[in-house]
Length: 157
Length: 187
Image (cartoon, rainbow over all chains, first blue to last red):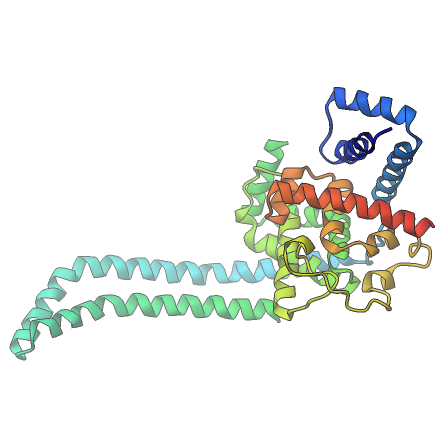
């Protein structure tokens, strides 16, 4: 029997278990195995290896589920307690954003007036207006980042 | 099945404590077994087991119910192990990198028993446990997912975040390695 036939049979033996094979391939393999003791042995060894793998048992540490459930409950409680604080932060951010938009034209005029009164170049008071807009969101973002960092550190401990 | 998964996804989004308790009970054996074969250490497997469920609580909203819950669960567990390996910069037998794709498998102590070997009872040290211990972790992992957890090839690809072709190739090599290791053990 040629090497090619054995090679094909071995490939099909594995393929049948991993991906499945077509009916014609199954028929061919069955016919080959009837005549080839070497490939039959490979098929039997594969079946035995997988049966042993499927029947494998691992001793479970006692109380593992209970300990985990307790930890998860504690964490859930902690998250639940933080929820109002986080919600408040988002509400404040939203309000600040809305107020910022609503008052922007007045603040622009105020900056313009102050700039002209103090004899500042236009670029300077425009820059001041830009900072007035960007600094609060940057502070809010830094607060959120610090909070996340603190949570990560707490989780790691 | 799809409806069950959707209901599960809703419960996880709500962080339903009863659902979480039930899931921990239901999947404790499978998750611990997977982690044990992934880490080869009972203590580490226990730690990762707890961390995995904390992650499930925190990121439950990410599960959309489109695929099996256990595939998502194993993926979380696997990512935790990989993060830990990266942090510790551990290069050992159980580095979950493909030996065919660059990073070589390094045997920490060829002459000494591995951690997995140490946790096994005398009876288990012969047979399939010992055979599994002898094959590289990347192959052991896919064998466990396919033949113990009965996950489909695409689900395994999802857990590993790897192409289907990689999963298949690891399975073929793993099966061959397992058969060889079992024959070696029997001899």
